[in-house]
Every structure is written in C-alpha cells, then in structure tokens.
Length: 435
Image 1 (cartoon, one colour):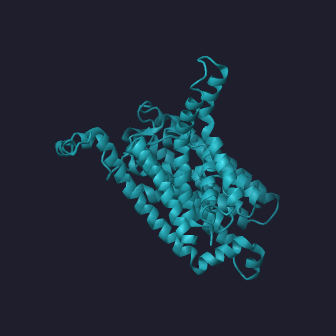
Image 2 (cartoon, helix red, strand yellow):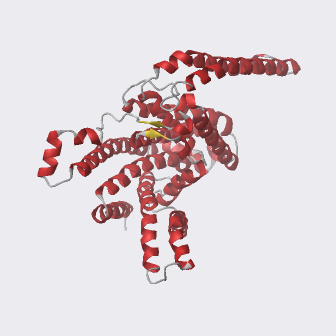
Image 3 (tube, one colour):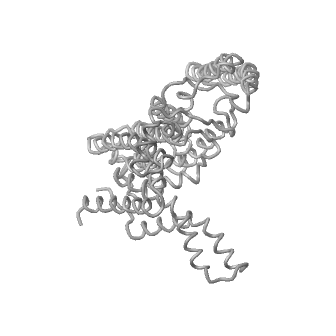
C-alpha cells in the first residue's frame, strides 16, 4: 500500500465513522464533531510544527488557546462605555506604568556596570514601579467591576466583526510565545515542558481572576458570530421556514444544521490555507533546515545554523496557530469560559492527536484531530450502551451493575490511553508517518 493510498484510506474511514453517526444519531451531532474536529486539527497543526518540525516539547498549549479566545472577546464584543468612564483610562495608564517599569529595569541592567549599585537601582525601580502600578490599577479595577457586575463588570471589546478577531488571537498567542521563548528555549526539553505548563497555568489564572478583562469565571457570553447567522434569525425568516417545510424538514433542526454548515465552510477554508502553507514551508529549504536541527542540533549548529533563533521562530508560529484555533473555538461556542481551559487534560488530548496521526506529518496531524475528537465525543455514549447491554440481565440494585454503569463515564480517558498504546505498539510513527 502506497503512502498516499494509506492516507486517503484513513481519512475515508474517519469521515465514514462521522457519516454513520449522522445516519444513526443526528446530523447535528455529526456536524458538531466535524466543526470541533476542524478546530482540533488546526491545534494539532500548531503543535506538530513545534514538535514534528523542531522537537520542541510544549505542554502549555491551552494557555495559547485561551489567549486566542481572549482575542475574540477583545475584538468582537461591544465596549462597555460606563466601565471605560469609570476606570478604563486609569487601567491603561497603570499598564503603561508597569510596562515602563520593566523596560526601565532592563535598560538599567544593560547600561550600568556590574556591581551592587546596579542591583540596588533595579530593586528600587521595581519596588517603586510596583507600588505606583498598584496605586493606579486597584481603584480603577474596583470601579470597572462595580459596573453592573451581573451583566458586564468589564471593559468589553472593540465591537469589530468576529473574523478580525481570529488573526488577533493568533497575534496575542504569538506575543506570549515570544516572551516564553526568549526566557525558556535555552532550557533542556524537560525543563521547557515544565516552563510552558507553568506559563499556561499563569495565563489561565489571570483570565479567571481579572474580571475587568475577561469577566473571570462569570464568563463572557453572546460573542458575535457574523457573518454566520443565529438559528433564531433563520427561524424568524418566513422564506426559510416555508422552504424547509416544503422540503420536509423541521425548520428548527434545519436552522441548526445550516449554521453548523456555515461554520464548517469557514473553518475548512482556514484549515486548507494553513495546510497549504505548512506543506509549502515543510518542503522548502527552511523546512529541511528545521528537520536537520530537530534530528541533530549539534551538527546543525556546526554548519552555522542559529538553532535558538529557529526554535524561537517555530515556537511563535506554532503558538500563533493555536491562538487562531482558540479564537475560532470561542466563535463557535459563542462564549469565553476561562474555567473550561484545563492545561493538562486538553493539552494531553492535542498531543494524542499529533502522536496518533503522525508526528512530523501535517496530514497526519489533521487526521489525528478528527479521529481523536470523534472518539472523545462518541466513546462515552458507546460505552454507556455497552454497559447497558452487559448489565441487562443483572438484577436491579446489584452493586456490580451500578459499578459497571458508573464506569461508562471513564471510557473516554481509558480509550485515549488504549488508542495511544496500540498506535505506539503497531505504528510507532503514527497512522500517517512522516516520509
């Protein structure tokens, strides 16, 4: 079996499973799997760039995804004028003071001679800047969060179309990746993993606690979705309702399917653009250089390659793609829920997508995104059906029956581990290996 035929067969099998789900369960469910599969495939592409191209072990994926979601809120949500009047400008001033303090400390470190005077000057500057920052920042935040806390209590955004938010989410993630990369990419791979996980926890903790920015755990709801219509708008269109009834469809179900198809079209366009750019980059001299660095950093550095600089470059690119996926996910959900970003759990899921699909292969990452998300959604109901079948003959009230039925909720993680073990045993380079 040739490489291309194997890859095509794998994709046909995965989409066949999704089609079976649509036929036996609901096309709404099937389209939901496709949409989140597209977003998962984009996340897997970003991680595959970092690991498959350059061997960078990033387990802080959810932090960059969360920043992408924040970008969607900042760009697309309408501004809260009362909050801006209460303390918006003071918050901006405080942020400028904080950034100026950090920049000033860096300049002192570079320009002053080594010695106690330099250390003392930096400490004095940082302490003074910190207290000045808090003096301006805290009252402004209190004033903002007191503005209708049940409904707003934050500054809002720019009120621009949501499509503008997608690249902004990527830029926010790229900026954070630059900061992380400048400080952590010189570390060994295991220390880099710990550092990225810590940064992701910090990012998510900020989103959970800084209500003035993201409403914290109160969540931002009603994120605009233009140009995709709302289901209720379609249901209020007489022409749409009449057409659907003439065709024999329930207008309510049809409206949901139409909206999901619109999202699928947008997400597919983004994925195809990214996969095209990724393949062009991978097959270029730049891509060959990145793989040479991945395989032997010492030899590549001896040939005059800037290993750290290239690592920083690919780290930023991969993180930007994860941020783009995060903005798309918030668009699909219609809300930002900082409490749902669990760095270890969902980072593990994205890594399983990359490993199972085929590390270093862009099409493998896409396949892994669809396959693993399908299993993540469908394994639990299949497990519940299986346990119902197994326990059908057991007496009601049986402890064993209750235990087996309760265990269906754990089928997801069990299946992920089992799939990972089977792939590593029988196809250690993934379902579509790197050529």
